[in-house]
Length: 256
Image (tube, rainbow, N blue to C red; front, side, top):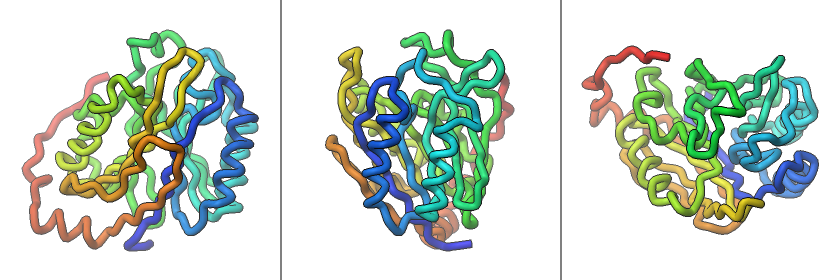
């Protein structure tokens, strides 16, 4: 257990539907990342937001690559990619650790504006990841717009979003990340891609880390960039004890 968690935000462009090219590119980037406990890649980091892209099984090459990187860098490596099981496909957040453990979360809110629900199966489980004494709650892109699903009734420490969030709605990304931190008295980490895809959609980054009062701790801007942030459990505990807003939160039951 550690009072501090060092997270590395990997804000990059992505190759369209080319897992090998993306992983080779991340190889060069991650070679320069040191001293992190958690390395965070964007949503659909193997294909970009290509809904009929290269799906893989959980024992496939990309998961093996994540496990190898986690072991060699001694850090958890996470991001989302297209996974198939039987005749179903998921936009799946995968968490790979240095000791070979793999956990995952399937995206709950599929982006109907782009027909994502026609390609993927909706996730039904809220997932809490325990790592180095920290409780981390993963979410994917469009999930950010639905605060009930991320409500901190799980007593998590970190709310983590990976995304392909476009420039046309980037103001919402900025504001909602900050709002999620404030309302849940949690660290919030958001990692978005940059660049343009084959559909001429532009992605401006704006990856960031916010503290439990909504203060900006790290902001990556609009260029390809890798940035490390330090999360402090004692600061989080002191904030919640001094301002115990979470004890007044509403109770609710989620429906499917």
